[in-house]
Image (cartoon, rainbow, N blue to C red; front, side):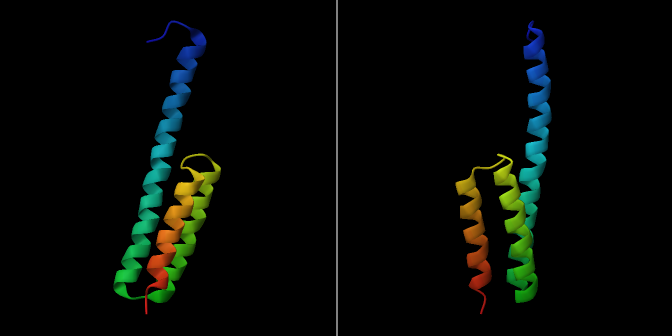
Length: 87
């Protein structure tokens, strides 16, 4: 444990951020899983709605710095390709 007061505070705030970031990343995985499930079920409308929700969450995570903006773009592209591939 650190002796410096500011470093003790940084340790506490970093832990809070780590827990929050982990929760958001887990939520992103859940939204993408919902898209995959809708695609496998063959429900195009549900897949489209799930993709929109996933894209919104990915953009929000990128804007807050939880994931990199390029990773968000890559994941959005992959999700949209799944939905567009349904015919």
